[in-house]
Image 1 (spheres, one colour):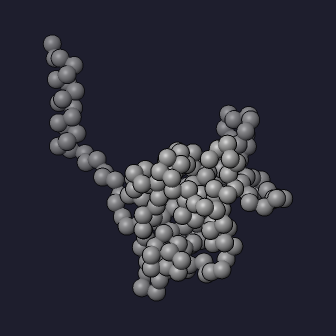
Image 2 (cartoon, helix red, strand yellow; image 1 turned 120 degrees about the vertical axis):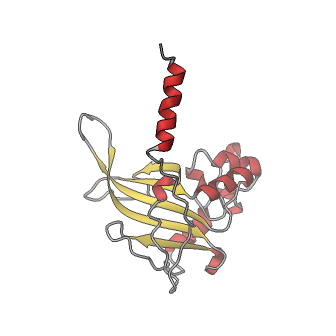
Length: 201
């Protein structure tokens, strides 16, 4: 009688000698063309997921539009995530990807709530000491993921993030697994601390 452990080990040996398991994709978080355009980070969904939002808007009166509220998912390159966990702030060459997706209702057996649909846009917020102000925004068309030019200052995305970002102009206040680290490491921005209720500081 063949022991179960022996069977399992023989299966592992066959796997090791036959089919190869694909290694995780390792690529620079920031990659530019010779003219300074950022290349599309095509493997961002293999990065660290930090949060999702639904129908979020920074305006007092926001319209969901004809497509309804949008989902947004945020991913960050693994090296930057590890550095944040250790220090409470982002290192140079951080890339935060905001993926915008349509919301759908009554898909398949779902009778209530919303699920995520097609990708409608991809925006990248990068920390790069070579850029004006040390941070930059790039907007990509997911249907045509060609290199993107930087969003020029002074666009509202810069002024909004600088005025309200919890950590180094980034919206860590919406990242539930990271905001506690920022509080512990005392890296919350002065601008964000002014907005926080005293009881939560």
